[in-house]
Length: 119
Image (cartoon, rainbow, N blue to C red; front, side):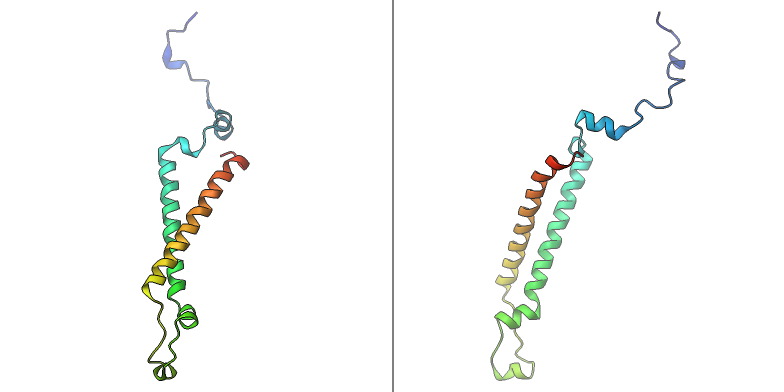
């Protein structure tokens, strides 16, 4: 017999799903099932890539790299006026290489990670 009083149907129920993480795991619902989490992950990935590119550029612009590879051997360099500078092409190249390496490493871990951990 069906109870016509629908207002009291769920009165005795405290929780429908007691362990939501186990429930999602059994349904194989990961982070990518939610658009907001997918977007967050893409934003974090882009932010990390920008940070790595910035680090590569900063390292290429450093005096260590400039004096090692592009040192000036003139008289002015002895008194600090003819200091070495890294060419802009090398700086841009360092940013591209470091960003590309980071994207490649991130892609590798994204492919390997799901087989080892269930999200």
